Length: 226
Image (cartoon, rainbow, N blue to C red):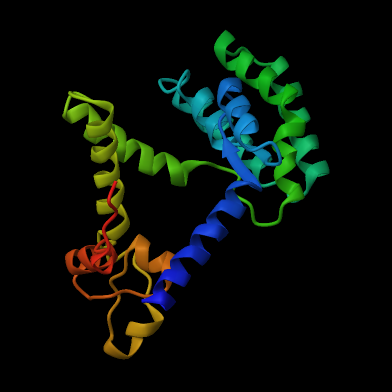
């Protein structure tokens, strides 16, 4: 039990260290200010995917322009270093000035050019996430559930417990066959099913995901008095 507890604490400390080092955000200034307020030493990585989605939302009906802009934007994203990224973004901006584009699209491009230095921060950190789509998937899943239940009805405590229940189910649910990765301890048995809990901790208590959740959440019978 102490070994498992130690693994949990180690992973928690690692997650906190990562959290205090790098955070990928959208371009909303209020979000960035909040992170800086809570964790003054972090480096903010501006999500490039939000730029692409923001532009595509205004030209979805024009398939030709949509394809052209998407290709150019992803070409910028694939720049191998700061200099190449900056050059491609500048040339993209110069190209856009000669084209007839919707005003909102032009505004997005101007903002991207102004934020070039913020996008280039990602090149200071090897293998960092340059898009926030991984956390967006989790937030979209949560938002769909909250929408279906017409959001919260009751106290702050009941809302907090409900969100914790969503997080527990997500952390222990079995991944699809396409997304699953063979666990080292299960290779000899030919098992390929895994979960977010197993991916983080590199072990599991039971092959059954529900038993795994119950055992991991049991706290070995320990209960607080408060």
